[in-house]
Amino acid sequence: EVGRRVKAAGLSLSEYVVLGLGGRAMTKEHALATAAVLNAIDPDFIRFRSLAVIPGMPLYDDLVAGKFTLLDEDEVVQEERLLLERLEGIRSYVVSDHSLNLLMEVEGRLPEAKPQLLAAVDRYLALPPDEKLNFRLGRRLGVYERLDDLQDQRRRSQVEAAMARLNARGILEEAILELKNRCI
Image (tube, rainbow, N blue to C red; front, side, top):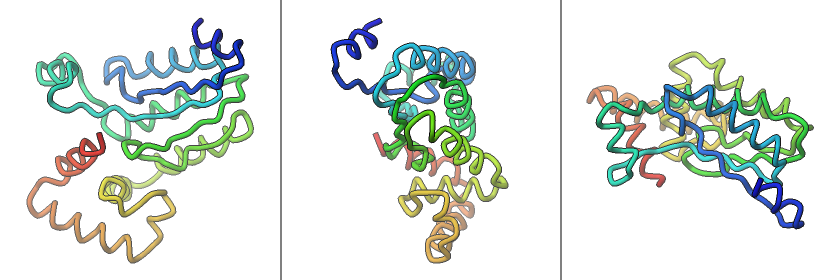
């Protein structure tokens, strides 16, 4: 209701969506309910932010207590896809412009850009597991910005070397999460 009032007043409205906020237990509900609200408001901008939980946040206590389960990055992208798929009848500009987000190329005006937005998400989801891991590490290291960066051999070699060092220490997944959390 407030979003519609802001729009009716002629003000520009950005709605921020925290991908993963429903956790593993409510990811589908979170995506569907968020899409329904956005469809009702038709904000000027929809800005994605991926959830990160660090010590000191109230949600961190729930995470430690096992009351909340974080989505892994692939699950966040799946939630993002479901949400995008359900956006209908709006002219919002979708932006994924924060370093916490995995897929920075998810950007464009609805409804025209919807096929390209979904294609970017699907392109990531279709990658083999080792390529997804490479991309995730490269994004978190700041080596990659977009999926096309996987084709840059100089960047790829840099990520593969880091991957080998972290794998040798058995801390690859932990390192990726720590690098992501540093973006807060």
